[in-house]
Amino acid sequence: GQQLNQSPQSMFIQEGEDVSMNCTSSSIFNTWLWYKQDPGEGPVLLIALYKAGELTSNGRLTAQFGITRKDSFLNISASIPSDVGIYFCAGHNSGSRLTFGEGTQLTVNP
Amino acid sequence: GAVVSQHPSRVICKSGTSVKIECRSLDFQATTMFWYRQFPKKSLMLMATSNEGSKATYEQGVEKDKFLINHASLTLSTLTVTSAHPEDSSFYICSAQTGGGNQPQHFGDGTRLSIL
Image 1 (cartoon, rainbow over the protein chains, first blue to last red):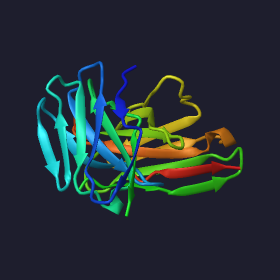
Image 2: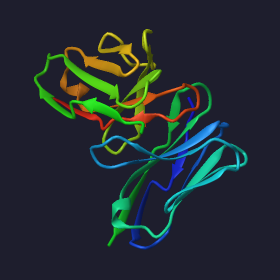
Image 3: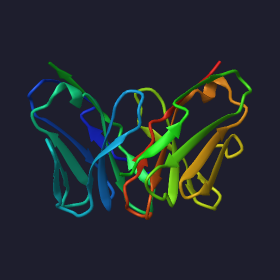
Image 4: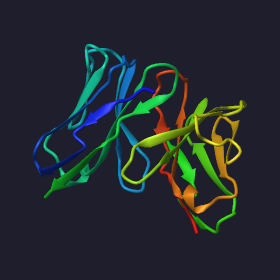
């Protein structure tokens, strides 16, 4: 089946640092979505990308849909302790079924 | 907007019990709802896709007689884990989508199911 390769698997950073994570695929995706999941809760949508090359911001978060439609990155600037959680990329390549990455566990040290 | 409510948030029950989990879209009509299972420190694993008024489509390896899905209205889907056993213990999450296709899925807060 389809796979999204998400990296890094985990990150340990100091408060105030910038963070970058990305997802790649061997297949073309029509949309890229970035979600954040806190422990014991469901994922929350952060950013949705619909066009190749699209660059979208949501506060301190910025995400881009790669030109080849096979990759996307998420940047978090000036990290704060509440940024802690698991970040998932996800994409549609046909129909409504989402393919998820394996997640990036982010730890922010105060 | 796009709020999805999932209930209950936690269930602990004896082996052999059937457990029903509800998923409701509170402020939008969900043409499609999805049910996922998530193991600790793992990604979400799609179990089934359901469209209102239609039979659910199950992913390979998911027993449809074990995990009964009903999507009777545009705002409610239920997942019933029948005759649950300890190996069914997991975190179950629903999501809802309006408009189909490439529209984002919005997730509920999950149900932690523990079978003793």
